[in-house]
Image (tube, rainbow, N blue to C red; front, side):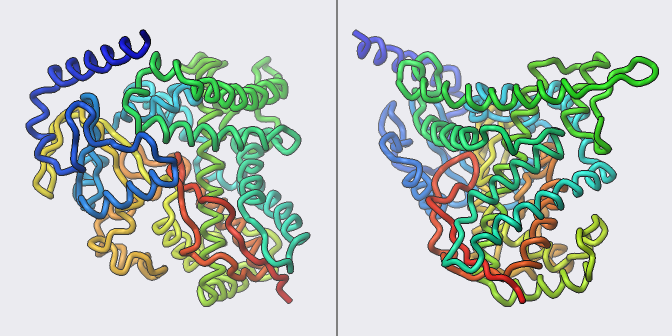
Amino acid sequence: MYTIILVLCVIAIFLFRYYTHHKYWKYINEIPGPTALPIIGNYQLVSVDNVELFRITRERSKIFYPIYKEWSFGFYLVSLLGPPEDMELILGHSENNNKSFVYKFLRNWLGTGLLTSNGSKWHSRRKILTPAFHFNILQKYLEVFNKETEILVDELAKDAGKEYINVVKPITDFTLFSIGESALGVSLREKNCDEYKKAIHEHGKIGAYRITKPLLYLDFIFNMFPISKELQKCIHTLHDLSTNVIREREQSKQTDAEGNFSYSRRKRLALLDLMLEARAAGENIDEKGIREEVDTFMFEGHDTTSVALCYILLTLANEQNHQAKIYEEILSVLGTTQYPTQQQLGELRFMERCIKECLRIYPSVPFISRVTGKTLHTHSGYTIPKNSTVLIFIYDLHHNAEVWEDPERFDPDRFLPENVAKRHPFAYLPFSAGGRNCIGQKFAMLEIKAVLCGILRKFKLEAVHKRDDIKFKADLVLRPIGEIRVKFSHRQ
């Protein structure tokens, strides 16, 4: 009985989608893509795991560059791989700012916060949160990064000299504890963060699984499967920690001489403080909205930075000459200073070029997605209809030989000012671009520079895993399969 109902639903969905979008199919049919079957289409990824999904996506990106389509049961996706001019066509225009339905798979966790919201709500939230990333506030965050770096270095020292350290766990702890102390104003060190991290990984795995199966886009069908209960367990774990964080910060409020509440007992103004005070002042953010943003920044503020740092350590372990040059630069700029200042970090120009090159090769977020606000005519000669869901594959753009000469080679000189000036501004998208670029990119760069200063002053990194040894799986971030091993040796 259920099978018959499901088949009828599938047919009804297909007919509805086809006839309501029939005027678009002329353009969609002109876009190349894998061989399609009637009604079922050409997703054909129903049985693959996240590892195989990543491989197939890269394979299709090479075959169909610069654009291809996938469709199934009347749903279609346009995958954009380049050139940079077409990336600008999407990301450089505000009418294409809306996030696509792909992000709905995050909304049961992140709600409609800064990452997933659209329109006036996004503008309102961005306005409230932007002050948390101003220059003077970042200086206060640097105090946290330096303190957490010192703790991390002490932890790494316990295993220095051994055959290797799997850097994933200590680096993930560092970024999670740093986001807690800086942006949220609470310590996460004593909380159940291991379960939280497991839940993030499982949520990403389920999200990638769901994206490849159009029938599971519909909640009432998805909820028929056991995997939906696994997802609910993840969400409960994720929300439990963020709710505790908000409660703890609220309990720290104090009253000034005029009877006004303040959440900023510490010298630095945490992002969470801004939201709590905005709510107290009657601005457009309530308790649910605060949790949306706390969930968003706990995820984005630690997971993307931690994978970036792991790949940077892996790369520098394999690039001894570049590592030595960064070490010399650190000694030259910092001298005997115990903790780097924001000004000193700004002077580490070679380190910054190496970081940027690592983010090119290993973009923390391998793809983003938008909805076209109008019909677009690409530079490659195709038409993307209005209201199309477009997947922008940053990973493939960054590895394209038509955009980057010898793209697999590590070359920080790509980011010398004179070379940047020759390149299209939308050729490099580690933090997205345009109006919806990453609000925390300066925060992330400051954190990465601070921790690299601490690590490289104390340790020499040696290769255990080669760069080519690391394989990836489809996820919300560029997630490695297994460990990332680096040998740490004490410097004399």
